[in-house]
Image (cartoon, rainbow, N blue to C red; front, side, top):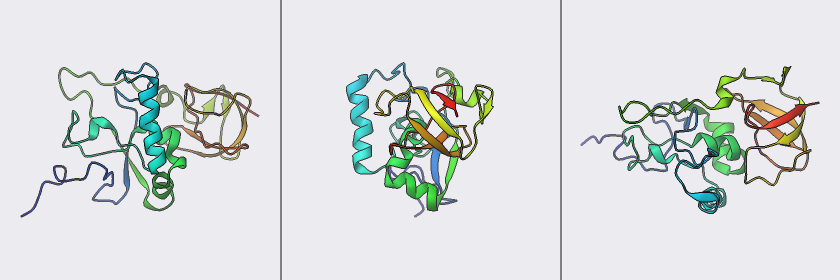
Length: 194
């Protein structure tokens, strides 16, 4: 007997069953743990634990709102946009998705309930994709970190790196000279183009 795909899907299965690509949210959901205002009230310790657990497991973090017990159980699991932006290169699952499987961006399902407002767009989505302080960032551009919105990184202001990619949301993937892999979000992170 056929089964309903979203009901019988493993919560960790973030693959799109039609394309075989990894489903990644196009922007952070309204209660994303990567929002600085901590909308789920987890606190720094619990938030760090969730992130560290996924990093240790080498896994991508599935957005809680897309899980079967979340607000949109029939939507199907998708990777948290905040985790993807910050940590996709630090876990084998993220590197595998980028190198071999590919990704498909899916919009969060907020706003289709009358009582649930849509999340505001991330600031990175409101700015031109490759414009930073009036300059065009492109692959190969050298940058210097001024400040980052990621409270969990060890990357220090003044760190130097090279832009290796700019994704469809404008996130800069940077190969830092000291080996870090933190991506930067224009409008949230501050950096200088050299």
